[in-house]
Image (cartoon, rainbow, N blue to C red; front, side, top):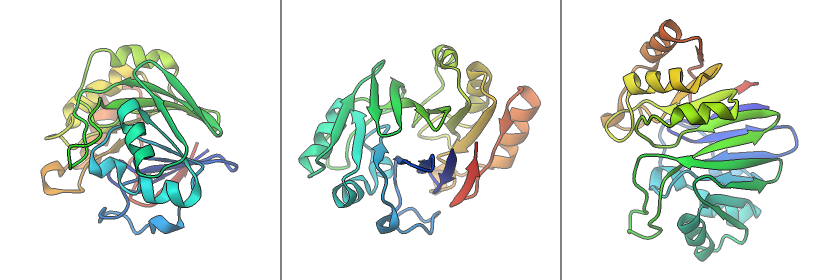
Length: 225
């Protein structure tokens, strides 16, 4: 299974047969050189409705027929925008998509479009794909029930570290210890001035204070698991 980071919170998973995008904020994301028109996933998974996470979802999904997996209100909004294959779920539920599944977990944040459409709840996602289990926390504060998410048998956790709008590096390092995960990947930092962080400092903290390995990816970098 190959994972590509497009900066901010945008990722692609590829198992050689199926391709999945997570929170595809590509247009307007100055960290990536990726052309969104060159992406043709089978599925798009969304954590919440904010513009910097929904991103190019509608344009990509309507062009290539991708399934959009999201919480109920956001999935319905995507359908109203012309997406033909929407797969709604909510906290605790699991939704299938080509090649895998996504289980919705709580996230402590907000969720709406910039025009106040698609109100609803934010979520994290426990994604089972390509023989791996990956926790995409989405935009969230630290919360104690991350210790329960650890029981999902995670291989990788993708955590925000930007602070201001999500947990910062100190709380994210605490989350790593609760999640008991072999590998952690930081995201949601350095896109905008309010979320400037040093990911190498976060790496040092994680690898000093836990048994986890911290993998800092450059935008548009791909790694394999």
